[in-house]
Amino acid sequence: MAVLPIVLYPHAALTTQARPVETFDDKLGEFIESMAETMYAANGVGLAANQVAVLWRVAVIDCAGEDEPSQLYELVNPVIVERNGLLVWQEGCLSFPDLYNDIKRAAEVTVEYQSRTGEKRSVSATGLLAVALQHEIDHLDGVVFTERLTVFEKRVALRKYRKILDRRGLTPPE
Ligand code: CO
Image: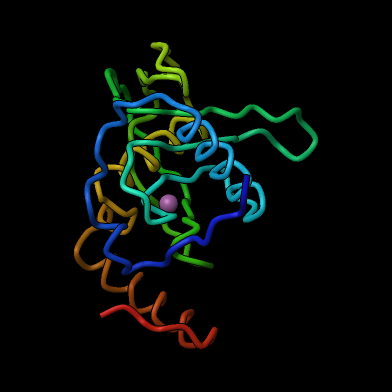
């Protein structure tokens, strides 16, 4: 297990579609454990493989509060099979440090996925978990959360993001 470096937007891995996992071996299990460790180290509630520059359809999510027991979801090849309603949630992303945006998504989703050993599983969720599932599955499709904004909102958000990176001495996006 290791904490992996998280890439920042506009790294190419964030706008590239990840490939389905076909081999459920120890290497996959170790990668998933490193992803969970990386997410917890960064205080995130979700992390997609694209964010550590690996193009596999793998994501981890844990939305449990600080005083609750952890509830880790290890999602391999996740697919949204049902969505209902609409909600607006203020989202952040570990690949866009300090940037927060109100994003409109389905209020309720059902996701089918595989475990690290390839078993079929499903989860139905509302609230933060529903948001995290949609946000992370978007990542696997190469879609970052600013793509869910209107053209105008996106322009404002990326301008703000550029300033945040400038202040941190990081390379701004194109
Ligand atoms: Co994200």
